[in-house]
Image 1 (cartoon, rainbow over the protein chains, first blue to last red):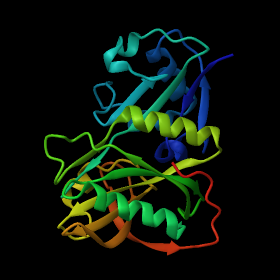
Image 2: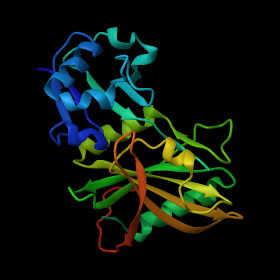
Image 3: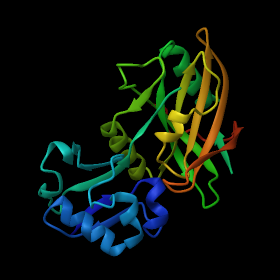
Length: 92
Length: 153
């Protein structure tokens, strides 16, 4: 068993065209590191140069925004699903 | 590249803009996408506009709502293929804010102009490039009555 990461449509080209990737780790941060280790091209699309998540990239553990949990240190288990969703906004 | 959508679903998109006028509406297009960025919309998911501070000229979809929609689409073997919003009393073309806030490369951004409460024009724009080079290109909307609508929400 592994943690499932759902990949949003715009990042699929950098994740072997897969809609989900199975990763390992005990925290969300470790899981994301496992993800970019498997698919290095994803790194620049997820993380800024300072190593932090890009401002418009939202990461959820199941139904919770990790910003309101323990961010990268949020514990994750094999029954969890991590979702990556870039923000959607705009206006005139 | 084109966006194929059943006329009933396109009607839902346009009606949503009329319902929320003079505020902007927003929602998600779920369907199938191929390697050449051709998309077929199977369902339209109306979302709430969380920009309650300035809903007449801004929209924002809750990430929690996107997570739920993305998860349900995956279970159905579908993808998020685009988004829609309205421009109350403003043309159906993308604005600098729309481009600045767009991050779903390869997806369609559909905009409906709503004038005095009535939906007028609906246009689609395809987001291309990477974050530093992103840009919109005009995209044809093909209204297709043969598409089997999977689930209307």
